[in-house]
Length: 109
Image (cartoon, rainbow, N blue to C red; front, side, top):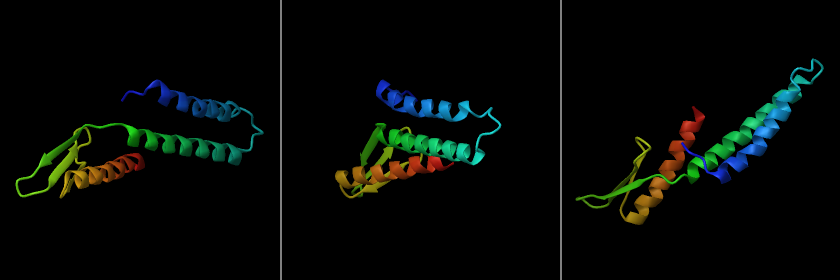
């Protein structure tokens, strides 16, 4: 997966924050609950940004008209991400929802 400059520039402040959080770990007088809270907040931000990034990535969508009527649509690079609709518009709307659920499931594992 490739990230563009804009995406990477959004991640730099989070990585800087992570370095700040972890830089004091050697101090034996640090409040470990505060460190754990900060680390959890950091990774929560990372997960949110990764979800937004994955949802924004344009995937190759294949739309096929069915002989019996309607359309089947799937995303080439997301195995099993498939949907359908009575019209092209419905099928495309449905695949966007399927893509969102597919990617959210990937992030939960």
